Amino acid sequence: MGCIALQREYICEVVDKEQKKKNCSGRFHLKEKLHLHVQLTGGTQTSQSLKKMFLDTLHISERLVWIAINKKTSLGVCDTEKRGKYPNRGKLYERDEIKKHINSFPRVESHYARRDSTRKYLKSSISLQRMYNMYVDNHARAGCNSPASETTYRDVFNKEFNIGFFKCAKDRCHVCAAQENI
Image (cartoon, rainbow, N blue to C red; front, top):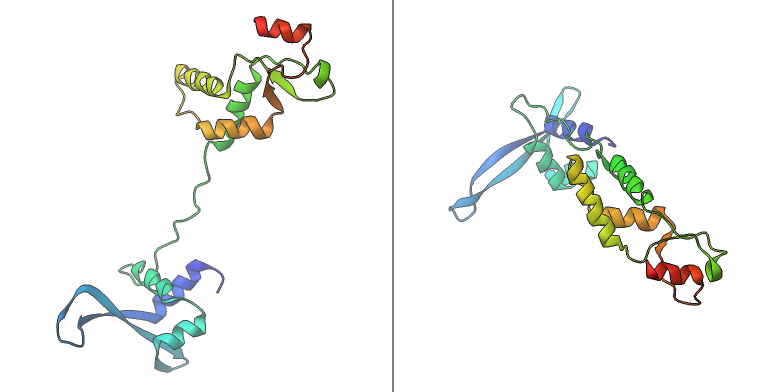
């Protein structure tokens, strides 16, 4: 059976539970234990089936049977599946907001030793942590819902932009020297 809802429905139709009152030593159980009674019908004939044979025939675990029984309503049918009803909300909107915020920062073109690179650079006075803090502040001032996490912000910055922070490490030119003085 492919559909979990149909599987549970079938199990609810075929399996009944009975409460076990005593164990072998005659003491009462502290935990409630249940015995399965499986009724398989073929035409007009009803036969009792062993639990192991039932589980092996359907290739299911005992846990799946207990889950189906626990989801059985007072009317004798299984409760509907509750998983997967709601999509993740706001994720794309959050990412678009983050992109817009990152794009608001002025970039320094690659030059001199890095002139062949397509990478853009932000001023060295800015860090990713400061950018995120500005994003949170802007979000709070706008009165929007809670901002995206710092992890999401870093993920968008690192994976969707070819941006670095301007640090003149190799050779210096007049642009590098001017950037340091700012």
